[in-house]
Length: 132
Image: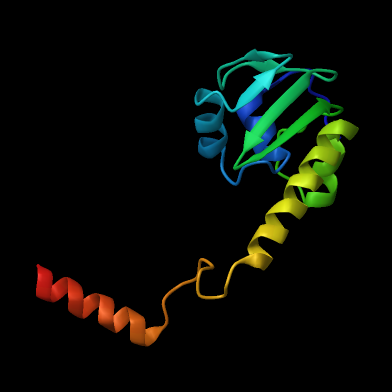
């Protein structure tokens, strides 16, 4: 895809579509959510083809090997070609997704997270005005 030999980790994570913006990617790297070759790094760390990157986002973890470098953010199908995920990592993540779906299915609809409807929003606004 590209002729570069090294690229910053935050820029690569953004181009590979793990994060929506580079600043979110940099915050994740600073927060210790990204490891390169088993070690914590900084957003300016240069990565190259063959490096192993571990990304933790929400409750899911990806263990991937960098297969290509690209400085530009491309469509999702092209971004998926920038890395190859470890089979064990993929299986574990799919298991976590299935477990989360099962847990959500057992919840009563009133207990699920959802936005308040118009009537509930009006009640919230009235309550806040009376309290404040």
